[in-house]
Image (cartoon, rainbow, N blue to C red; front, top):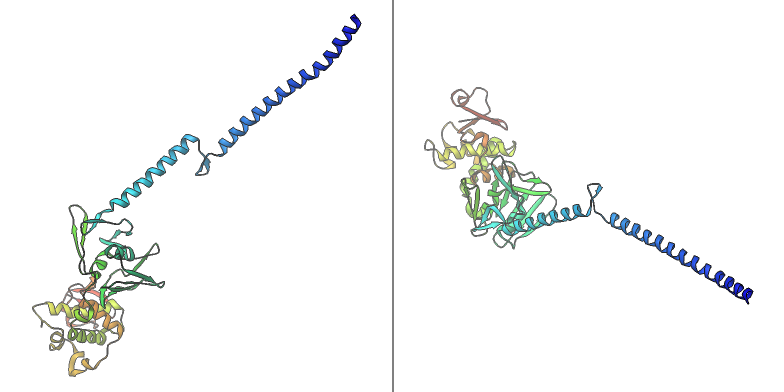
Length: 327
């Protein structure tokens, strides 16, 4: 009996030992798996951090960055709703997308954006060099590089020309306002520009330009400077119109040209029989619409001679094209 009991105990011990070993092994494997899970979770958390500026940010830094971004977006939205507080159209702040900037004291804007702000229904076209804007009251074209825009057949002088700024066709704000027959005022104390809408379109060239003045002015410009750059042609026209405005001269274009010993090209009716080229007609329209070349502002004389009466008796202003100009 003792031998049998001892044998039974040995058999029981043999069967229990493997079970204990298995339990220990299971516990060790579980511990290893738990550690791996923690490492994996840590790695995922680490790899989920944001990359900004080439480095990883911690959760706090990511939260801060997101918060700053949200603040910037909120501020931009608020500004868009509030509008441009330095430019008002009929008392309402203008949109902030006008691309407005100043250069040499002149305020410039995106032509298309400003046109839409003044008249939301306008149609806008672009052929790669020219913007075309149309509405029920206005037909406007502006070609990049030209010294003018054309609105309802009117030629509005732009001393710096139609510009392409950051792929946006840009012109002086005052020119757009004039084209839309609106009014512009400037409050120097507050730095605020106010625009009041008008009819929506400038008076047409057919009814605005005095046809007799256009006839004579385009021909004297052609006769005196038809082969010169546009501003050289304009300067000749400016001299004529400066005389018309002066009490010392006749008050019509033809009267100024017909004065004795002034414009030899007018004599014998030869001037009336000339046919001006396109640029001379454009120069005449620019001048009749108030365009004046800054270098010769107020000039009353021009010539191409080195020893003329004007050169000896009048104050020199500038040289444009093939002429010298004097006050």
